[in-house]
View 1 (spheres, rainbow, N blue to C red):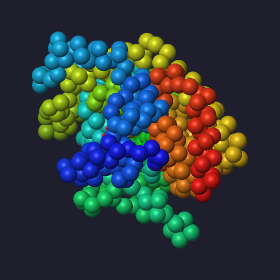
View 2: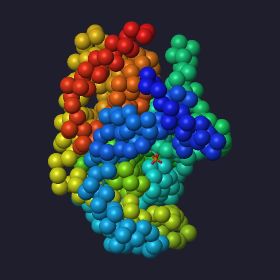
View 3: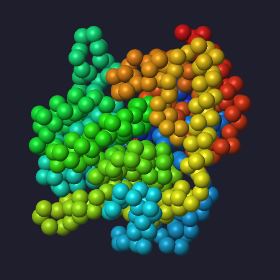
Length: 441
Ligand SMILES: Cc1ncc(COP(=O)(O)O)c(C=O)c1O
């Protein structure tokens, strides 16, 4: 990844490997012995590694940062909360309803909500509530979507190793060892934007489908997006069969629009999951939607159980209240979209300069880049793009001070603080990085 010698980083990784598998706290943070990043500090849209190299960051911790790292407005509210109110009590606080009221003012389709501490937990809560409400078992998910690291959602279509010449469809495999075969029993995986596939699955097992869970803009698959017609199809088929539509807005919520994908598409889910941008980097998440569905969460024998020690902790909720208030009352998201658009244009100029066919997918606040002559319509289409060129380009960007995930399945995330970056510098770096990527082929 980097030409720069990283003595301190190498030392820290070596030491960490004495204590943790791979030397990292999350396996996706392991980028190899040479390239694993150890961070010293973050501020605004910049990240400084432990060897002193500074990066403009478009990875933004996989998306939570919507205003900027260490946003003073949010941090001061959190510090005040810690010093004056506390962190948890195991009881309720006025913040619970205040934050939900804010969410409801931005996302009018949300009637009732509960909190969680991570996107994974929010998805678990939403799926359990859907099953409790419908009395059905099966959950339909989309190839390339990601819904967190819990057994049932850790089945995926192996597009990486799919050979379209010899296999009709990619094999469905677990993310790794330790996932019981039984956890697959109720999961159905369909390719995005295929009406045929969704009809087939509902014809086959529609009576037992509790929910479709979908990231309408796949934040874990290059922002490849469902068409509006496809989302309407899912809405219709759910209504027809008495299944629930769950939009996983963990990445898109409070980012792609104040009201998330639901606002962009004008299509309402029954339940929605939120995390990431809701708290500008503080660990807070939520799920909610129709009141009649959410009211299934109750204590009687047919009720759904939900809760947790850290649920609605004051730190997370204070951060959410501050972040959502800013998103609601200022033009922060307009800024994010404007800057994202400018960066897209800049990158497009660079690719055109080198004669590289390219398409963007997703909105300006989290766009994917695909080297090819068609916007991918699903994960299988992504395989037709020149993702190897993207990886080389991305590694060169990182070397030159632009941080991103070196994989075109992860979008570029924009935050309000990106408004201050030097676009001329970025264009120069992008030109150099692409030139080197082409020459290295
Ligand atoms: C769409 C989506 N759902 C769920 C999750 C899981 O969230 P967390 O990592 O906070 O558990 C993610 C994480 O990236 C996500 O992008």
